[in-house]
Image 1 (cartoon, protein in one colour):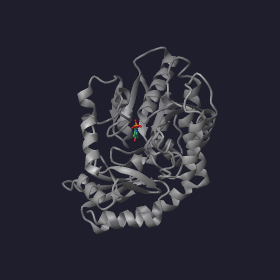
Image 2 (cartoon, rainbow, N blue to C red):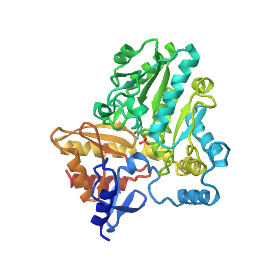
Image 3 (tube, protein in one colour):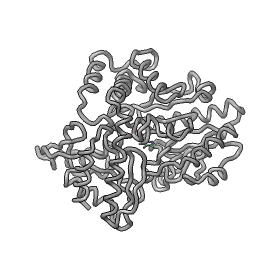
Image 4 (cartoon, rainbow, N blue to C red):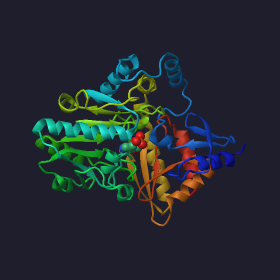
Length: 396
Ligand SMILES: *Cc1c(COP(=O)(O)O)cnc(C)c1O
């Protein structure tokens, strides 16, 4: 059957919530994907920042296969070996205190919201606590996570959303202060905004928020779903800022392709928030997902991926900067580590560039505000960066 037949069959059957690129992907190796016609694509999207280890990693696959033949699922009524191991490794990497595993990023955000509200409820016995979130943020598509996502276009058709959310300007400490009152239980932000256009938090902004949170006993929630798990060269992006969140959300590369997320609590939130009966999930933290998480932590260390990201980042930055120099409609580069964005001039639709890149065998992402987004697998090499630049330049 040819490619178009699969595309037509999928379009007949699926709810049309995505405008997909006309390609049917079949397999992958390293940073490369192959479609059903055998065409090769260099992948600088990594399944939206998920496939940090690239494709077809033999050690990762072996760990998954081993777990498949032992035990896939038990429910959270029992303990399993992978559950204990995955939880410990996530706490070791983050220096936080307790973890709750979920199946996705949006569920991790839901859990963090509930933990923050419960923390405040236990403190003052009141309800109606508020969360301050950021404009141009993205935290997921379920109703709670959508309520804290500062994007009018995503929110409008689904009103009324969860109440008690106020929005402030990202990297604007005064606007955060303006939104805080006696009911505020948490401030929520991405350490590096992803979908909103690749905006790293400024150090003085994040430190200012942390100080504010400490002073008023407000919980700091950092969404590390996209920027965490090594993407910026440390396990979590906040570790480069000298701050520490009270709650952190994690997903995407946490399972490197196996669907798993987590919300992780610092000491304060762990001591007094969610208790037995307050929260649950059937799948979350099942032995298969946890075997993936556990293997991901082991393989990141074995391959020294964090230092690899730190080594290869300046090369990517330099090549992108040089590309911008050569093309006047490319305006600026923003980002940290292997999470980079290039601002494209208005009127030069990024979607067209992505389409051309695909034709030239390069997978790229976009972000809000006409931004080209680069999220390669963390195993990416300098040679592959050169190849990406060649294919991108041919697509501009
Ligand atoms: C992708 C993403 C989410 C949502 O994760 P899902 O697994 O798609 O539900 C939340 N926050 C950030 C920062 C993300 O990038």
